[in-house]
Length: 99
Image (cartoon, rainbow, N blue to C red; front, side):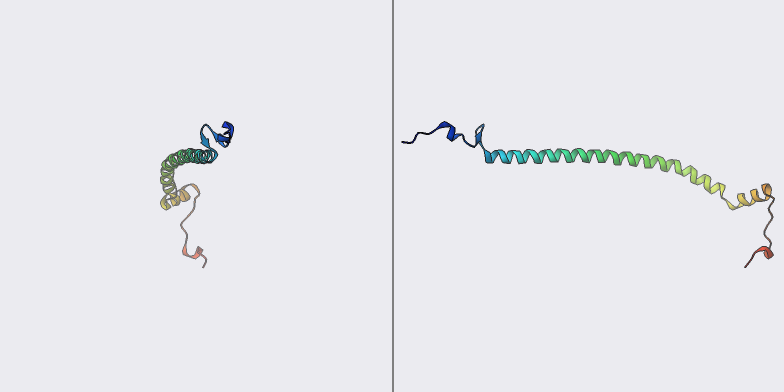
């Protein structure tokens, strides 16, 4: 009769699980770790996008009054009036236009 060595029965086992099972547990743990890292990255990017959209809205709000002021300052009637008053310019005569 062969004597069964208790050490030979547990060879390749740890806590009652075979090495094959440990590989799958390790792969599942690694996959879970990757998913958690990706989710963390996704949340960071989401926060950055949200902050960028807030900044964009605030800059657009600042831009609207500037556009209105620009339209006012470059109105042709206003520019002609300032040119006549401050620069003593005169209306262009037809013979001054070169063709």
